[in-house]
Length: 401
Ligand code: ADP
Ligand code: MG
Image 1 (cartoon, rainbow, N blue to C red):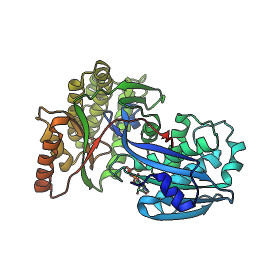
Image 2 (cartoon, rainbow, N blue to C red):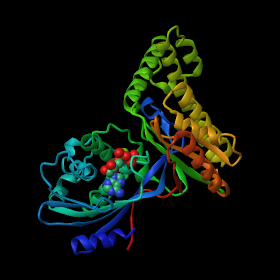
Image 3 (tube, rainbow, N blue to C red):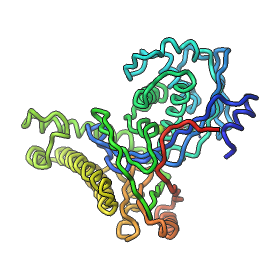
Image 4 (tube, rainbow, N blue to C red):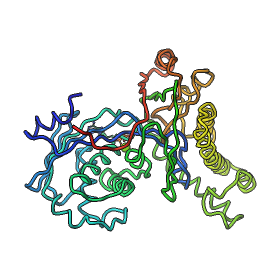
């Protein structure tokens, strides 16, 4: 990969004002509980988007996606979702800065006085090595890189959390994806060898050491995305709301899933039809996963990666059997490593019905396991397995010359 600085120089005949790197992310545990008032445990990784940026004076944005060989030029005014997908991740956050009333970050800052500067336009080059659509949040990495760069270039004085909220709004309005906050939060707040426990309600967060020593985090990418994903996601949200409402009838003090015990799930969600059974299963998973995340961070605090890994397997079982968002390919990949003494933990990661599994594997065994799994995946699933070896790295930052 030619340095982004050189690309910028080639395109614009000038050196960039600054260079920013923004990483993709993984989520170690806490799946499908962000929208149920739970906690997630993401970390930033060594796959990233890199950008170079410099100011213009003619009220235009010149945007270059190096990896795609595409250049798009747009005026700074009348911003609206664009037909070229990657452009939306840039102009979406520009819109957040230029039109504060459109963003949900309740930002009472000096944005207004800075708008004139920004409205004069900029040149930008982006490139990256985050596999697209693998669930590692390349889109959030672009949004965070751009917002971080604008914040520096125009002295906007935004906090990382404000930037995360603005990037999330940008994804909602310009990419049309109603995502949670985790991806943007993790890309911006990541720290080397640390996982971040994020309270999806209060947005409080705590860093925990992720001491991997002889182990690596490996992602196995099924390279499939079953069409079920979005309709089933909506069904899950509905089933959880239904379960919560039933429990609240009996226990009026219960506000969210946080207040619910397994005993209450068992007591309230007796079922006599298939719909009732599904609601019971979903709620059981959510309550169990909430408890699991709290125990898992204690494992990290103690440096007990064995115990932590075991919980990842338990999460997978819950997602597969109770929450029913897995698929044969994901189950196969987790099952195949579940009795391997060199694998501490494995589970499907993300929304489900495809995407990656996340695995904690002894470094000395990675090559052998990868080889075996690639062969058996090809033979049984008739698909090529993609493998990403990751390390845990710092979040969005400026790159010195
Ligand atoms: P994810 O965020 O899980 O990776 P998305 O579909 O949300 O998947 O975002 C992927 C999109 O992000 C791509 O379709 C592309 O538009 C954009 N993108 C990611 N990486 C790059 C890159 N290196 N250069 C240009 N655009 C990129
Ligand atoms: Mg995305």
